[in-house]
Each structure stands twice: as C-alpha cells, then as structure tokens.
Length: 93
Image (cartoon, rainbow, N blue to C red; front, top):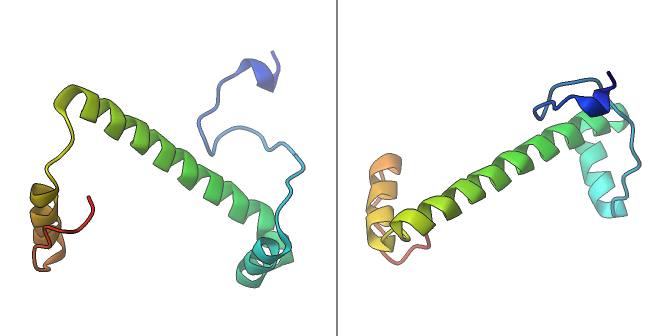
C-alpha cells in the first residue's frame, strides 16, 4: 500500500516535497519571521489554518442553508458579551 492509498488528515502522514511559487515580498516576509530553514514548517502551518478556515466556512454555509443567516444585531450583541465591549449593531457579522 502506498501513501497515495491512505487518507491522512491535515498535519499527519509523511512529508512530501513539492514546488511552490511565491511572490518575492511574501517569501521575504516569511524568511524575516522564521529564517531560511523555517519556510516549509511555516507554510505547512499556514496551509493547515487555511484548511480549518475553509472547513469552518463550509459549516457556516450549511448551517445558514438550514437555519437562515444570523441576525447581525444578535451577533453584535453576543460579540460584545464575549469581548466585554459595547454592542455595535452596525458591525459586520
């Protein structure tokens, strides 16, 4: 059985090399943060976070289909409660 026959969740499984093209500015910013030898690990973590966000966006879209979109005023009020700030009913949800 090869690695291609097994489904691994993000962050698991053996490493595999690929070629990635980035703008010079993006690569410079990454290297300033993590050094030349930390680029792969940084990109791995960034990709994992993006996958989590994509999955969350899909869950929210599915929830909205079933229950309708959340009331922006209610979301702002709950956000204010969680963050200890004033309710801003005009804030984007």
